[in-house]
Length: 448
Image (cartoon, rainbow, N blue to C red; front, side):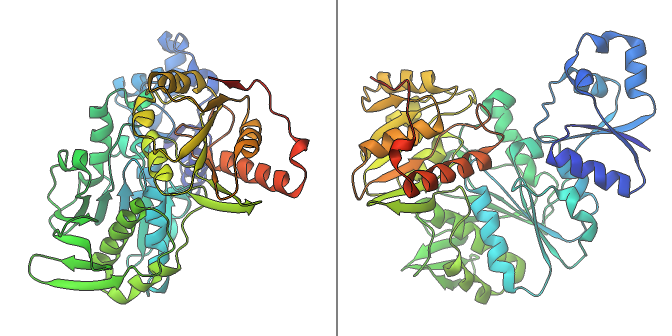
C-alpha cells in the first residue's frame, strides 16, 4: 500500500518511520504539490500525484482547506491524521485530555501520579511526542495518556478513549477553524466513539462548556473547585469523590506546589481520571511532589529582588489572564507574537490591576496597542524583540515585582514554537542577570 505524508515536521517524520517499519510504500508531498493550486487543475499532474495512493497522512498543522487535501477528498482518498494513525494499534486504555488551556499540565500530572502504578505508562500527543513514535510498543494492560489539540481531533473518525476529559473552551485557533462552532465541534470529537463503559470528565465551573456538553454514550463525571458534583470537588482542603451513592475523601491539597486557582481545576481532573482508571486513591499522594511543566508559569530565577517567570505556553488570552491572576505582586508583562485571529479587548477588559507595565513585540503589537488604547491602558511600550522587552521591563521593575512572559499569542513570528520562545527567554534572563544589563540595547520603544 502507498501513503503520502503531508507535513515533514516531527509528526510527519514519525508517521513516515512508522509506516516504513510496517511495510508501506511512503513518500512526502513536495512543497510545490502542497502550495500550487493551479498545477492541481492539470489532469496529468493529478494522475502523477494520486496514482496508486491508498491514503494521505496529515500532520496536525496541515489545514484541511489546502487544495491538495480538498482534491484528495473529492477523489475519495482517505485522509488520516498522524494522531489517529498512531491510535489504530493501541488496544490498551487511553486517557485523553483536551481543552483550550491546561492540557499539558493535566496530562503531565496524570503521568506523574501514575509513576507508582504497576503498569507501563505512555504519554504523548500534543505534548510533543507523536503517537506513531510509541504505538507499536503499547501492550493491552498498559495505560496511554494523550494530550489532544483541536487540530489533532479535527481529522479523527475512529479515535476511542476510555477516559476523556474536556477542561475548558474559550476562543482559540479561529484563524484555522474560522468559527467558534467549528472549534467546539473539534473539541467534542474526543467523546464521539465512547461507549457506556467509558467516562467523560467535564469542568463544571466552565459555563460555556456546561452549555456545550457533547452528546455521548459515556458516563459523565464532573470536577469543580466551587461546588459538590458527581465526580471530584474540594471540601475542607481535600479532594472528595462522589458517585451519587457515597462520598469518599481521596487526598489532601495541603503542600501542593502548583501556583494558581486554575491549577486546582487541573489537579481535580487529573485525580478523577486516575481514580476512575485505577480505583487506588493512594496514588494521588504524588500530586504534592509535582512542580508543574516547563513554559507554564515556570519560575526562572530571582535577581535583585525581581522574579522572572516563563509562561511562553500562554498562546491565548485566557491563559494570560490565568497567569496574571496567579500573582499578588506587581507584574511587568511581556505580550505579543503571531496572530491567531482575535482582538485583545477581552484581555484589557479583564487584566488584573496589579499589572504595572506591559512590553509588546511581534506581529500582533498593533492589535494589542489598539485594544490598550480602547481601554485607556497607558503603561504599555513597543519593543522590537523579546530581548529588548526583557531589558525594558527590567529597567522599570522594582524589588518584589514580577517580570512575566505570558504572550497571549502564538510564537511563529520569531520562533519555531512556544518551547523555543520560552527557552530563549530563559537564556536572555540568565545572560542578563549573570552579566551587566548594559550589554543589551532596546530600540524603537514607544510609550503611549
